Image (cartoon, rainbow, N blue to C red; front, side, top):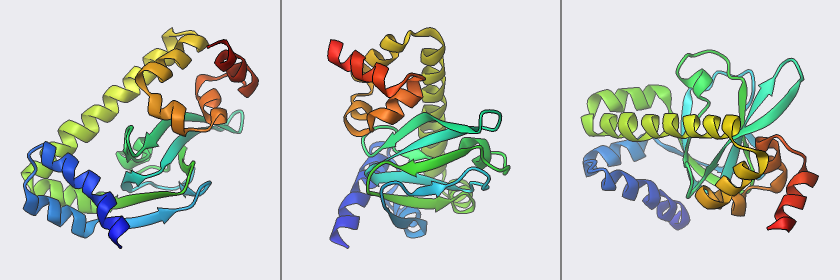
Length: 198
């Protein structure tokens, strides 16, 4: 229980740094559900409706998008306790449609889960929480998504890897190489050769 309380502190401190009222934070934490997730567990699967949002307290996840033509999945984003900790399947969360994405734990992890219904109710009741979610979570998620898409379209494979080293070092340190290679669109062997050059 002490470990869970300590992990919760990261989210609480983040909310406080955005001047969120302690009473609002307490209410948010009351509706959150702590989940312990084992490595290689998929918490949202392709074909489900994702009506939940998660904050990574410990560990890490990747999101993988499924291509129905090739019948293969490819890593498209990373969610770690110290890098991009808010996660959901946006293609489903905002539309109510079935997701084309899964969320896979890459190590033993702990998350706090919120339902969309609870978040919407809290955001309309507590304006400071609404401000935080709209201006921090949604805006930052859109910025990051845009940056990653631009990078994948404009950079060479080696430049993408260098970008991850320089700007997303936590990803390099915590995410298995096979998922980084999958994200870049290269083989694990090519990535291994690139690492040796550096």
